[in-house]
Amino acid sequence: MKRNNGTITIEPNERVTFGMRYESDELIVVDKPAGVVTQPGVGHEHDTLLNGLWASYEKQLRQLGASRDWGLVHRLDRQTSGLVAVALSQRMYDAMRAAFAERRVRKHYWAVCLKRPEQPDGVIRRPIFEQVKRKDKYTSEKKAILSAEGKPAITAYRTLQASDTAALIEARPVTGRLHQVRVHLASIGAGILGDQVYGPRRTSGAAARVALHAWRLVLPVGADEEIDVRSPMPRDMRRLLRLHDLEPPSASKRVPSEHGGDEVARDPVGEEDAAVGEDPT
Image (cartoon, rainbow, N blue to C red; front, side, top):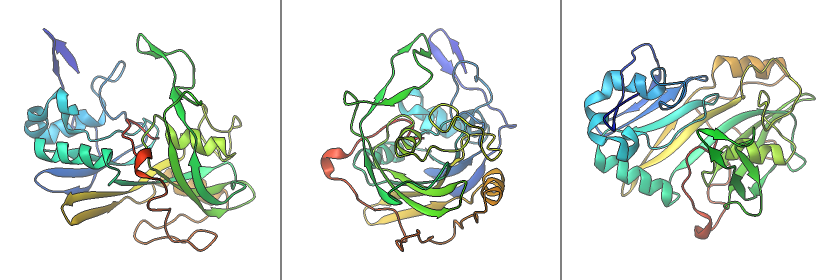
């Protein structure tokens, strides 16, 4: 990303690869690999997902411009893998942002965690406060913390499997606070493996990165129509699960939890709790 006379220029980079999970004239849903930043910033001007998208969709994304985030409807943390929705028209961008604001989008994550929570399935309702940011740096290693001074944050979760050394948990953030899934799971004793900030301090099970994958995204694309996009668990997380005597889940079908439910609570909160955020991972 370059700034020339106050204007921002995004440079295409074909070397940044991504998987295509859904494509139409106005909307695409892509698979972001772990380790790739979603959009350019300090230290990552040319190697982000947006740079890769620019190589194929420059015309559409340029028309959207910075005011519409170059089409990026939402973002994932650098270490988080999985689905990202990208609008290719102003109409679709505005419609998707409205859908997020009105809580009509369902986001599902798989997380490999330290252990099974004491309550295997439930809804976490704990406000999250984003730490002060100064000169592109946060004043604490933790960018987000639990605090009564924070904004409402709600995450539904269920335990899919557990062994003596780890647990596979599905989480659905209803609000979209910064690092919400990581902070909330850590708060119930189920810190995500590989998360050196919010998770367990020990290096467990050869988790080379935060073991979190955005595997399912349900988006409304019309008055009575929605798309259900899914992403298979990446190889590194499958290996991690097997290391802990757990079986990788399938993205092609619903997976029952330990207690019989086949989906995270679809609507665990009231309308007053709805919110839009930037990065729930």
